[in-house]
Image (cartoon, rainbow, N blue to C red):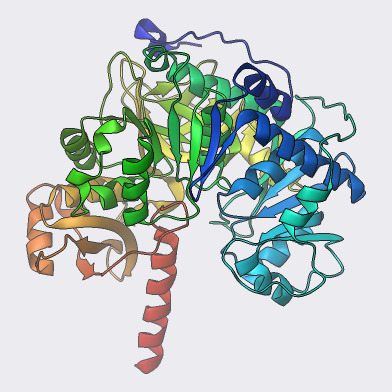
Length: 544
């Protein structure tokens, strides 16, 4: 197949991906840098040697519980020491880590535990009541509570710190087959139907980390190998983006992780000033929040050399403003859980094209195909569905053969995202197929409208959805958060869009909000707004 991106490709295309477990991948780094800082959390530093000892202690504990290779261990934790120790301990024993957002409801938790056949659960103290509510007594054979927030832990429950302390760092040896053995079950957000468990192998995740390290290789080589470097680990590890960029890639660069349990702009700015990290992976909403913070200029943001943005599209206007104010470079990329998750990135060296997600990562083939059949390859510049092939692509969905067959076809991963490729092999994500708004037969991708809204000087955040219209089928509605102290009317916003968009793409309604619903990773939840809008319309209909 043709690969136009190779004309000016700044990386090595044919990388060697070590066929080792994720535990051994980290162990090799730890043996090279035993005294280097690996983790920082609430003012405490842990070096690589100590981190590996704690991991091995936890692996011994898991083995003592009777957990065997292939058993599922669910982590319901924010970023903290316990997450890192339990994650790698499970991988050392060939256990499969089930990723669980700590803010899930009891109903959502119950579904994932039962669907994945989880037999052990490690939960942060604050969320133990949700576990009780989910009534998982028959499903969970081993439950461990991590004391983190000061919530009272019921007597008799196993406590993480005590378990870690009383087990020696000598777990049994377990043979891992990287290309076959699962490392992680990463549940998708369930935007269509029930959540699906993405099956990711050790090889998938090691390969994706190696690809990401290659993207940062030339930048990393500017620094003294004997000098410590830190990475802001704001992205939740339970999200595939944070897992790969921070935990797998960051720790193996090596760059010590400044662990952040939840997003708080004041805390982030304090940690940046205190520890001076040089790498900052984030999401657009995080960069927007920091850029609009009154203390931004006094926070030491200039210590950051490179920012990596993913999980949601980054408005070009925001990229330009953030880089101008901080002097850092933002590398916008793209990925999805089914690909471990990273598939594209703008290069640190070579040409960066703001608004694009850059070129495919090494060894990652991509095509744009027609969105109806998925069989016809589209010409350069023409929009269609993005499909991907590479060593980071999942084995499939756990216990979902029909879903797997629809998504994986002839070795290609069908992403469900609408994209186009330019003549240089740079890709542009237009929107999700399922988010498309159909106005009188015309297709509208919400991101087109949102890009314009972000150009408005008074708007801090914006997102668009389609709402029903009796004549046109659907029209655009915009939800907007204004910058602090700004005032605007819906008519002003609509007029602004009218001067920049074709008539049918202009929002018919604008709703102002103090804040927009977001996931823990900071992604604006378009789906929640759509559900809210549907509920409101049903109530209005009943009132009539």
